[in-house]
Image 1 (cartoon, rainbow, N blue to C red):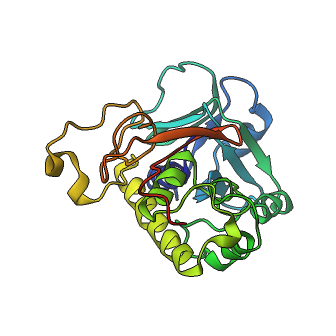
Image 2: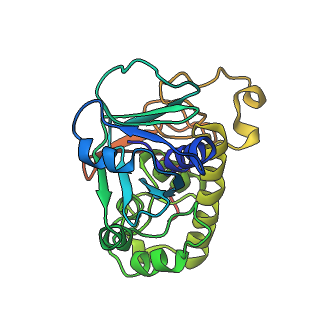
Length: 270
């Protein structure tokens, strides 16, 4: 599933391509036809990400389009109009560019109360300037649930997925099964700041890179990571391989139905 940086990058791309422009709106697939027709010919006002959710608003329209990509959704923008429809396009936007939304978990036109209800369920997003890390800390500090689970709970922290979860725990030496209430406030503050920095880098580059300069391929004389996920990481999908820092073997286990990766040596002190 795309992590929060992907949605923020998508919001920036949609903003650059469409904000302030009259847009064509259609649903070639047929599952968003009445809503798309209502948006057709309107001026797109804003595109904004909250965690893994995208909201698109239009001038003089109180409702917003809510998009959640889920595991398989894509929203691809191409610099042309009148392109042939390829695949199951749920929603198409056209101005000077064509944006095609395929396979989302959600694509719906929501009233302001419905939008507010979604936002109320989300924890703070490290990529948003209006985020309040104190809200996440209160949930974490009161919980006996493992921090690895809490970081993936979108009601605790919005936008963090499996990669950033594993990597930020490694970078701060936190055993993933540490109960939330055992995490020191100072360490949480450092993790929050680190997540913001890592995810902002991801927005700019379009991929997840978490290794420090001294552990990059050129610095270590090692080949770049070969993985369809892309990006240089410490532990994610590196189970069975040696840790870049201490040479221990990276481990993997299933937690709440998702694979968790960690280094038993670097992440031992809690």
